[in-house]
Image (cartoon, rainbow, N blue to C red):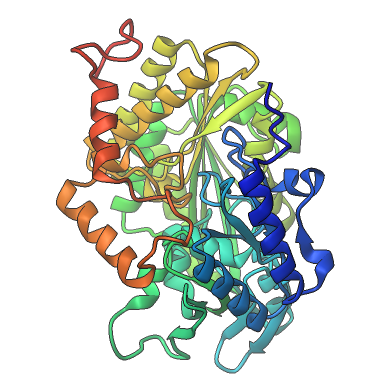
Length: 496
């Protein structure tokens, strides 16, 4: 029997060679080679996939990053950058033949420019820490993923993270001004600038969401916004989940752009209420959380209109938060939904498809039908305002075949998202999880363009290889797997 903790002789020699070089470049204590040291880096938040890296290195300076990357380039060793490890698509999944470069020690806010409403930070800074530092000056950083207490801004850039307030204020890409990036050749380049636009091609948007495949981000300049004078959230209850889905479209159609518009179905409501005691109605089929912000006068007018629209759309009750404490409690329930659902089942699989809002009711019904077909329960929690679905598929990995069935179920949800004009990811990235569904999202010609762009930045394919962009051979194999000899996997299940 092969012991997975004992590397092959060739791997051991390469590990020793890399360790010797890296310990000359950075603090030797931050070059990790022992099995027990490497184990915490086997996966990101998508723990269904696990691989042990060849070696882990945690540099402390940009110069050290440049030197480490040059060593990897010269030896032809892949290098995978990692932030806080909260990603949910396997984007930072290591390889047995690769260096895992952690940016955890890059955790300083370098400059808080209050006059120009911007902050210059290192990639290991936590998302929430930026707003905490800016709050005394009446400013904040808008993108707020549910994991904002732990996720790092570098990881947010890599995956183009969103959050509950992305409907009004945009994703990470809409809140960046500049990036400093180390290329595979160890060169340091700056993309973007101090203003809202910069001359030349828009490489800032290209780099954001590129999942560490084009360069390693070592510094980020973000936009800061004034904290609104007032924010108020309404909690609407519905007896029918389809009505709640239609109510989302009704709010937007009324010309209201909420700061946040979130939806939860009954299993998610009950789990969150039991966990956070947020005051959610546990008998509701679904709830919507609709927050408006702005001046006092704007909020007073908008919250009144929101209430009218939601009641007209079929809400059985609309409760407006009485004060900031209750508002924070409502959001605490929503942001704790993922860990709360974890109490319902030994495991769950979180998806990330995005669809046009007008199809919310239909897609939710189809997910419910698929749940019955696969025999796996689902809790729906998502950014309803921009159609970003987060179905949580409940399963038990200890039961043979359940993980594979959950993955197949998740793949069907992504296929459904594409079929109604949506996309396979809204903020979690593609990573390893959705790489096969990229074959459904894009034609071969477009995938070829993606590979060409990758080659321009990384001609030898050493930066986070095997993620996000499938090869055409992989797409051909995926097609053959889905329809093999005229038979589909799980033939007992219906197709769309």
